[in-house]
Image 1 (cartoon, rainbow, N blue to C red):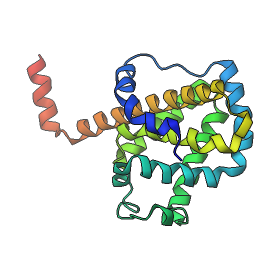
Image 2 (cartoon, rainbow, N blue to C red):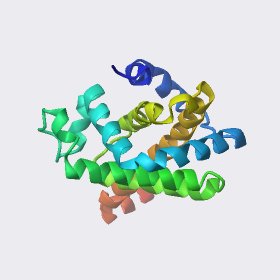
Image 3 (cartoon, one colour):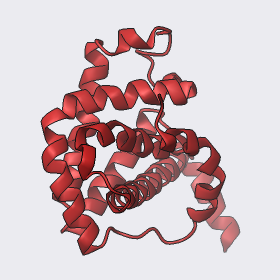
Image 4 (tube, rainbow, N blue to C red):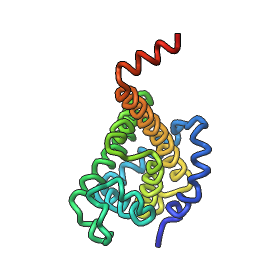
Length: 198
């Protein structure tokens, strides 16, 4: 019934956290081409994929609903499949994925996009611990659409893209968190800290 990847997501959390300190790689040329080719097929079903992705996310990780105040109290996940707000959010996420795919050949632009998204997620109170789940659920949602085109190599390519993007989003979130802490520090406190450093 479920996708093997989503079941592994919880088990691999610890492994992923320990790898977060290691450098996350940008997809290589071969992976970029595979992602772009598969996106041409996925793009036709982006609304459907967005809904499936989030319904699955709430099934496999119900704690994620706490981030989405509109869906927090919805117990019937089947009702979510027809929810306009969920559809709109799913389309926004799919739009981000589409922009990411379009920027694969321009790593600097992709990095800037992902870091900015991480910064905005700070203001949505959406902590980084949930970011990895979205990639796993996206992969589960697109497998049936791609059918025989789905391969282990394609799965690895998409995983690489999501690991790259989520690492940058986490960086953006942390940068914004630090900036907000700095802004919250009163000017007098900042002066006192500078004086003690002398």
